[in-house]
Length: 187
Image 1 (cartoon, rainbow, N blue to C red):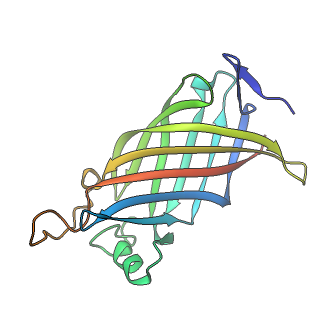
Image 2: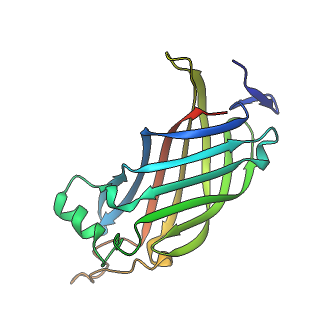
């Protein structure tokens, strides 16, 4: 198995890489009462990465089933799914489609793309890291990527909140998004 070498740093083999849904973690962290971190994740994640010979010509397409949200609290999950927040009946999917790829030194790059949440599309930059590539026990080739970004949920029309008596808001506007995906070389 070989890897493409760009500026003396290994990158994944060019080709189409399918996200392995069983090894995909798209998580978010927000603040509750402006102090406590509350975390959640989505378990329905599909998509692909097409790695080009020229890494800057690569493409990323991801779809997240919003009803799959899991935060460790069934009541909170139902509220997240409700019309007050994600409104999964009206907006069942979130999508990300890359528009540009820039690769820096080593295994780190930036993938810019259109993120559509709650029916609103905004351009976001993902700080991406290529974690490595391995051959699995069944003869397949796998590559692992991690990424992160921060968004203001109100930019996507998710504005529900409660003003606290002492000041501040019940739920933070700024949300951290972290992504860890294992992909399988399809072609």
